Length: 240
Image 1 (spheres, one colour):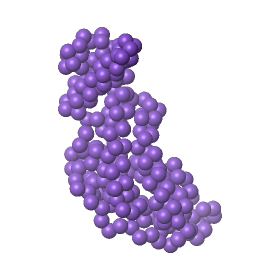
Image 2 (cartoon, rainbow, N blue to C red; image 1 turned 90 degrees about the vertical axis):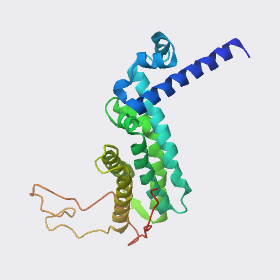
Image 3 (spheres, rainbow, N blue to C red; image 1 turned 30 degrees about the horizontal axis):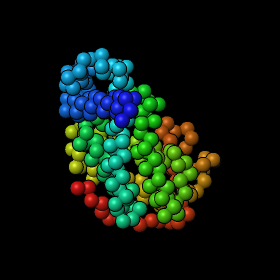
Image 4 (cartoon, one colour; image 1 turned 180 degrees about the vertical axis):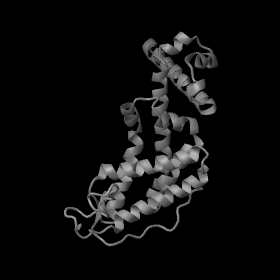
């Protein structure tokens, strides 16, 4: 083996060792315990060696966020095991919330301001692509036209984040959070599949539930319009 190749492999192994050690510290003790000095001590290297691979703690945390979203992607891919699109898309909700419960410290870092928002979005892309694929398949299967597809995905992702946060913070517990996520996702899909055009508003323009001068205005249009009157949703998704 050439010297250059051997050195490259050694550097790759050392970098991976740093990442795995940092991930272990983060998962077990939280981000406050994650320091370059602590990582160097645990892997029995001098701190300057770690700095050769990561310029600072922020760079290392970004790498952990990227790794976290890769792990999340692997988990939500389990949805592909389900036999039908309805069960697959609801299984995604369950797996997302389960991941948050099993990796509370990592999940928190993946979703807070420790990492720049644009970098966070890039790191999350593998997981959001799975959601987009499943949602597109569901819409095609049920003949539902999502008029603003990106907005529809953001609605789902936001719902999952909110319920997962309640679960991993201990507010409702992870098992209940998983059930609620499936129920909430089912309700969203049912709303999109059953929505029909409403009569014009007596106040003119598009239909609203209140007049234009009211303080609280609820727009009757959502992110989807349907070509068929209803869709059958699954009765149960295993959250175990």
